[in-house]
Length: 246
Picture (spheres, rainbow, N blue to C red):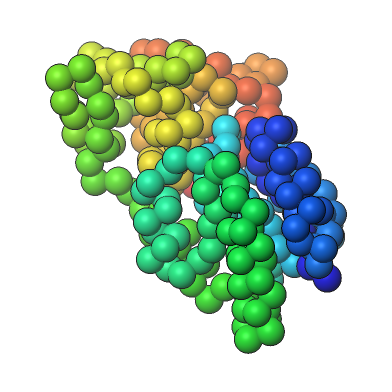
């Protein structure tokens, strides 16, 4: 019997996966469902699962950000994703398992079977997991941003912060101008380096290099190099201050 933890910010998606596991994978026991990286970290540190069904695209901290918090990975990982082509290619390259949403029962059964077989051969966890985390967390040299007349390739070092606006993202540059993209903030969060960029709020991702001041408050505010003041959510305050202290 495999004890599984489902990590997905979409409630319906998590419940659907739980239902599919009950219907098609009798050897899997869903020990819990959480909807954020922070709650997942608490659950894993409490009662470690055998396998984590991990959504890649989540607000505040994505699936790869979560895995970076663990020095060792005694649990197996089956990634779930709706559209992240970049992540899927990296997962394939590193021979880790993943499920594309909407999840097909036959693919779910195959992934679970692979997980079971792997645990017999390699009970210490995926040897390639650290490699894939490193690969996907590396700095993006050029960030592709779709525009009305083509694609603009931005140097991440020129980005001060990104501001979500429903299904659009406004990218504010150090030169003082901004570019609006039809990609969501969640899309960019997965592509940008977690060592350089941090989501301080559901609406904003900042370049840590351009923080000039932190103002105290419930969550507080950051003042960016070009003068913008951005709200920090209370939940992200401690992590932000820790990153800025490095």
